[in-house]
Length: 339
Length: 131
Image (cartoon, rainbow over the protein chains, first blue to last red):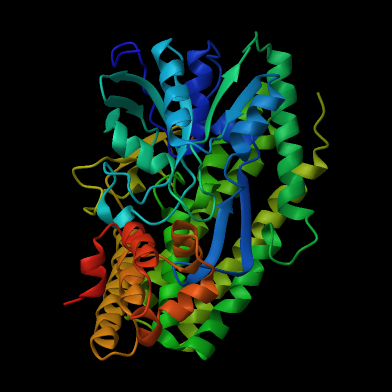
C-alpha cells in the first residue's frame, strides 16, 4: 500500500489509533477513537505494588496493553490474528508477506529506539503500537497514530523496535483483524453496553485498595508519606512521575478521563439515552481535576512550594477525584443498561 | 477541558508532532484538538531528565573512584533498570549486581563483556575504559 492509498488518522492513544485505523480500513466506518476506547473498557487506575518504573511509582491510567484492541474486536464479533516470533527473520518475512499483499498490520514496539520520537520521550517502554502499511525497498511505511503524519523506518530500525527487551517485550508481535463483517447498530449498541459494564467492574468492583477509583485514594494517602520518608526532592520526582503518566502523549489529556467522557457522549447518542450525558460531565470534571492536581504538583516538583501542606493539598485533590469517579461509575451501574 | 483552554506551549514535541487531546467545543460537545504541549508536563519531563543526568554524573564519579564497575554507569546512561538489563544480557539480577563490583568486573570473560557491550550498544573497549 502506498502513502496515497493509506488514510492516516491521528488519535490521542496509540492502541485506540491502531484499532480505529485497522477497522476503518476494513470498512467499519462507524468506529471512532472514543468508541474504541470505551468498548475496549480502556479507563482504569492502578497503583502497582512493589514495582518501580524509572525509579518512581508504577501508576497507570488505563487497562493492560493489548486489552483495548482485543476487547473492542471481540465485542464487535471480529476475529483477530496475533503472532509473536522467536526469530527476527521469520518476524520480518511474515510482516513482508502481509504488507506486500496490501494488508497493513498492527505492530507492538518499544519506544527506546524509535527514532522519530523526541529523545526525551524515549524510555524503555515496550507497549507502543503502530501500523506498518507498506514498503519501498528497505524503507517501511509507518502510520503511528499519535503522530500528525505518517513516518517511515528502515528495515534495521523496524527490527530493533520490534525486538526490544524487558517488561512487555514485543517479540515481534503483529496483529490484525479478520472477517470484519457488517456491524449493525444493534451490535454496536450491545458492544457499547458490554464495554461500559466491564469498565464499571474495573473501576469500582475490584477487591483491591490499589485498583480502580479506590486506587486513586490509595495514591493520595501515599503522597504525604513520600515527603516524610524520601524527602522533598525525591517525593517531588514521584509527583512528576504521576503527572507524566497522566499527561503523557497518548492520553488525550487528564489521564484518559476526557477520552472516556467523549465516549459516554457518543454512547448517549448511540443508545438514545440522555442519562449518560450527566455522567459524561462527571468524567469531564474528573479530567479537569486531574489537570488541577498536575498544576499543584508542578509547584512542588519545580521546588516552588514544598511544605507538608502543599503535599496534602495535592493529595486532597486526588481524594476528591477518587470520590467523584466512584460516584460516576456507581451512577453508570445504577442505569442498569441493557440492549 | 474547553477548546480555548487547550495549552499551546513550547516543548520537546516541537518539530516532531502535535498531540491530540479531547476538548469541549462551544456547543459543549467533545471534539479532537491539537496541542503543541503543556509546560506543566514539560517541567515534569525536564525534572526527570535532570535527575537522570545527576545520577549518571554521580555514577561516573563512583566508577572513576573504583567504587563500582562501568556496568552501573552504562546502565544509568541507557536509562535501564535491573529487569531491562537482565533481559538484554540474559544474566540474573544477582549476577549483574556482582558484576558491578570492580574486582569481579575486572575478571569477566570476553563473552560476558560482549553481552554487556551489545546491550549498551558500545564496544568492549568503551565498556572497559570509561573516561
